[in-house]
Length: 132
Image (tube, rainbow, N blue to C red):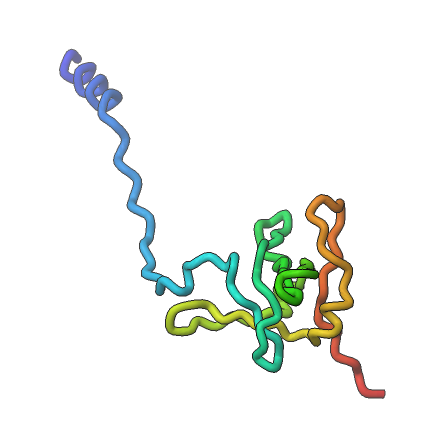
């Protein structure tokens, strides 16, 4: 009986087994670097602006990128939110290339992004029209 009690005491005192290590995945550096500050080009390949923020929804999924478009000599810079689905991302040799699939003139006509506003206007792609 004493041996049984001693073995139960030792079993209760032993630490639980260590958890299995997390799965490790190798990721190219360019795909893991920050999007903030990255240039955004328009359909013509011209630099439209730079990513200054990423807006996420309640699930933590990116919903929009806040892009600051450049004015002449830095005068007239403005920020606008662009739907995440309207952006394309491609890994280049040393950076992430981001392009927007929206017309630059339409983007410039968007209301300015205000971080303190309770809701944010987001530029989205128009739904394809159905032929009649």
